[in-house]
Length: 497
Image 1: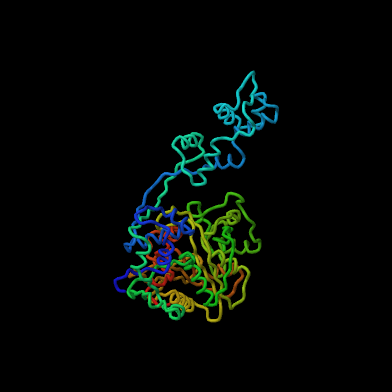
Image 2 (image 1 turned 90 degrees about the horizontal axis):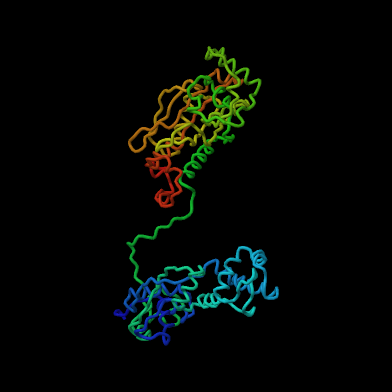
């Protein structure tokens, strides 16, 4: 038993089916074997290869040229050849027609029909008329040859030449497998033993277990790689951020990306002469160019900029409402926070927005003109910079970071302000800005309570966590690249989440 060759159940059944149907030493194609056994060729191909690997038969691969019927030929087989249509047309009209009339009735097929019917001696042209010379039942030789070809019959070189001349067939390379049996299948069956993966009740009750061998397993072998469907890794990261914010009690607010300069800059106490408010940094809409300003709020914002309010001296310039009314693609999601505050929500509240923002940038490995930001605002009892640092610490820890720090910073619409840094792979990375909204900004909105705010760009953080060197990889659709990215991003943070 130990000297016998182990085969699977399907290989064994295949050899049994071959008994009495194949001859030793004779060559068969896998297509011929499939027809002999009445099974698909797709089943025969892997079985003969497995048996060849075990030395039970020989296989040889050859590339042959065959001819396939073209779409034009299929149309002719279905509707009739042009010359056949011409014959039927002439017979219907008494055996002849003026050339111009035949051309009108046959349309674009007239030239093909005349050329082939004349060559075959079916028609001739006399005195401007096409005359029929054969019976109306005549059939094109090409039609007969195409039928033979579709049945799998071989054609002579001259017959193939005729079909190729009319572009009725096209050459196609095909790989075929030729199988040779050194011995009869009966002799092979005596040399083999069926190998199975597990004993079944049927094998035991029938006694077949005596004739089979249990397959041995290599427990150290690597399992096959499986690539199940999942979200794009960057989308997955964005959704994780959204979930963390909701876990922290924040409610998501969404606004369209087309925004007034008023909400994107002016409400946030950013002066109109700031460099960021130029076409070199901001995308401006061509049509429509302007929107409508909220009249009452525009008055208080004007005053904040020109004269100052809530103890501020303002910026000391003439505020231009036409500039504030210009439509842009928002440059940060803080514009959404500004709109929320304009509705004067009463504390306690926690809101956040997560969406795309747009800035004029040249595309390179570190910059894109379109990216994502997450922005949050909050107000409740005890709200302060200390509270904000505590909340941001909790947020960063939920993202998997254990090393982070904050330091003083400057932003036009917050005071005091801080920047947040995280340690990724031995390097400190700036990822967020935060602070308490300035009194003059809140006063212009009619708000008399403190509000904490913070914002963060997402792409830069994702690049660091995934170890990417090109920001464009975050939007890659290359399946080969995507399959190398683990489904859990925090593996890269080196922390337990």
